Length: 539
Picture 1: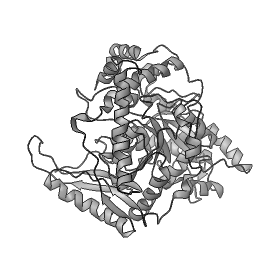
Picture 2: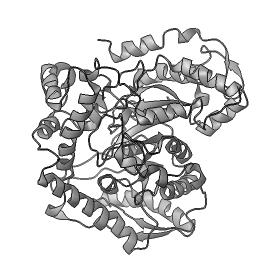
Picture 3: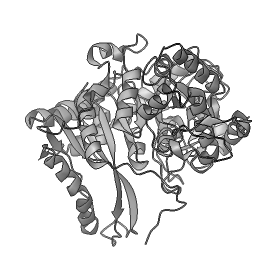
Picture 4: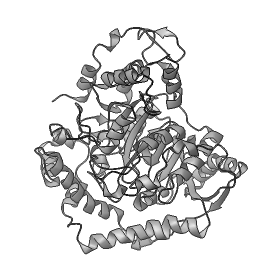
């Protein structure tokens, strides 16, 4: 079988001999002048469209430039799993349309990466990072998300690496210490400090965007898989309401929580991307109301002054150690104050603690994973048709598939009953009641709030369980001081961490969280480009 590095090398053969082209400043240059094209660093969809509109740049040249950045930089990050051999041909078609005066959308001619659990009916594989699906039949049709991107004129340049099976194979026991690993793609690395956890499961999508290997990417989330890697890789992550974006053609975990969503460097680009992929789809019953609830253009909510008069519930999970708490407050309080100075009212709120009566969200996912994955595999065809088959494959291919962690979640899911079990139905109802009725909806209604806001933390799982939208905006890099041992908690060295501020709304509240997230982004400008440092500095 072709391994990841061989594939990338083959896919990029001949790029060293590219002809002259213009950079973003209109200057002619060749690949000999620079390998990484620094003019693409931190560029946006709007910037690139302006260059193409003024004929200083073509989609083909832009695609070539990003392919070269992948070739030269992704040796450090390992974010890209596979390249699309048809990428340049697609870019050529978009250029022909533009010459005829036809521009499909703001994504016309823009290269994009999609996560390797999203079906494409083309020459690429769709494997969820596992060798088990490498030789499976090509999907009969694109996933709805991929089809929407093509319809919008985007150039799907390749597939991004991920935590294998979207991080639902192992409980994390044995020797596993990090997300972002798959059998096919190996370990994706955090672009700020290459030895740090990139989190997941949309690790490759987030890292590729942060490292400026691509303007924007698509990830998927069941519980934290867009938001978490977005935060630690310093990018914008938008998890839509479940049912706003079709899951048809996406390798599933949970039909009650799965969704695809944007990973970008700016809230503007996230709004552009969401506008392209949202909508109703007969293949996904959850999207029946999407066309009625969606906005045709989410960029119309990009209001710089939208925090004026906003009433936001501040959900702040404070560290327990005094040494860390002081530094935490010193970092976050000035950002909260900027929001207040912009006219927002921040109301301290807390979610109820259900203690031992809290619904077991992982058990719920185990039920749905078995049922949903078996349905996908049966429709896909191929040698491995059930979860039970995959468990056997992993056991027979331990060297490639289980060198670092096992498949406890696979085995536990296989032991679950059908979705008609009363235990499952009761658990689903309880989970929704606690995250929606007694959770997000209750806090917003009782406190007369427009939305919830807070540092990355407790809201991630609650928003995911509710199926409600969430957005994280880069907030800079914060210092975490050393802390002495306390009780059962060991001593820690001083370190650093990327910070992200989350905005959470009720169902279909994407317009609100985009509006407030954009205003916060414009106030703080917290995005910091990575420098690919080998190791996290500690003292």
